[in-house]
Length: 88
View (spheres, rainbow, N blue to C red):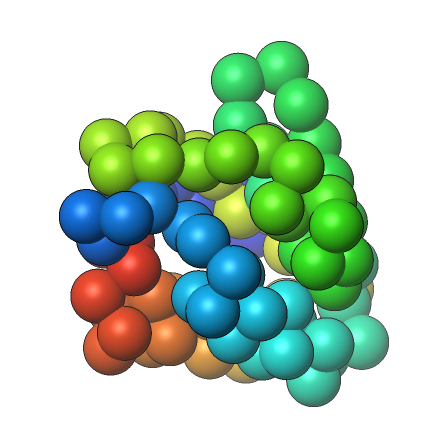
């Protein structure tokens, strides 16, 4: 299991377009991928789950990846978040 902390850096937060990108990237991996924000955990492969959190600029969250391709998954998700200016 790998966990990594991130902070939303996008001015508009994690709105529909970047949330969709995150879900699409997560869906490429067989590992279970969860996003933890405050006391809530959602499956990152679910657009409704991710959008329900309403992550805004400055929100701190954690990605939890567990499975056979967890290292590849966390790297791919981190690259997407950085490249798209969503989170760091």
